[in-house]
Amino acid sequence: DEEVKKNYVKQIDKNKLAKEYWFSISDFIFRPLWTYEIDNYCKIILYNYSSSFLGHKIDGKYPPEEVGIKSMNWPYIYQWSDKYLDFLKDKISSSCSLKLVSPIWYSDKKINLIIDKTKLSISVFDVAPSNFIRSIILNANIYRTNNCAKKFLLDIVDLTDNFKNIELYFKTKRVLNPKYHSKTYINLIEKLKKIERVNFIDGECSPYRLTELTDLSVSIPFTSTALIGKFMNKPSCFYDPLGILDDDDRAAQNLEVIKGKENLEKWIRKYV
Image (cartoon, rainbow, N blue to C red):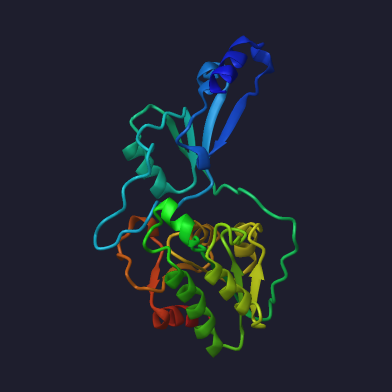
C-alpha cells in the first residue's frame, strides 16, 4: 500500500499537494513512505497533543523507552511540553526541527458543561485500567492497576465528604468500554454516579474546557491534564494514591505529586 501511495504522489502535479501534512503522535513510529517523496514541496509535521512520559519511575528506575523514539526522522515535531521537548532532543539523532508550541487541543464533544459556581469545583482526571486480556497484550505498567485506579477515585470522593461546599467533576480519559477497560472499574463508576455531588463528564469532552471552568484540578500520575491546569494558572496536582512513585520522577514536570489521602486533603484545604 505504501509503495502505491509513494508512486502516486511521485507522478501527480505537485501543485495538487497540500502545503502541510500533519500527523498525530499516536502514529509517531511509522512515518508514511510517501511523505519522503514530497519533502521538497510540503511541510511534514508530527504533532504531540500529549505531554506525558511513558511509565513511572519506581525504585529509582524508569521503564524501557518506547520503540522507535531514537529512530524518528520527521522533518518537524511540534511539542507543547518543554520537559518532553528536551527529552526528545536528547533521544532523536536525526536533524528534525523540534518546536515548542502552545498546548494542542485534540478533540471535543459539543456538549454543554454545567458547573455549580456556588461551590468549589474540582476537576478529576483518571486513567481507566485495561481489562485482563488487554493488560496481558499491552504488558501494562504496574501502576495502571484496578487497585490504583479505584483508590484514586474513592480517596477523592471519601475525603471531600468532609466538605459541604465542594463539587467533583470526573472526566474519564477515554469513553469506557468493557471490550478494552476493566469491568470492575466500570462498575465502580456506575456506583459513584449515584452520589449527588459527584458529576461524571463525557469522556469525549475536552479536558481543556473542563479545566477552564473548574477551580482546582487533580490528575492521576502522570497524565497531561495536570499540565493543562498549570498552563491555565489553576491549582493543579498529581495524586498518587499508592504513595510508591519517586518524588523526582521526570514525568511530574515540576508539578506537585501528592501522596496519600491525608496530604491531598491538606492540599485541598488551602483553597476552601
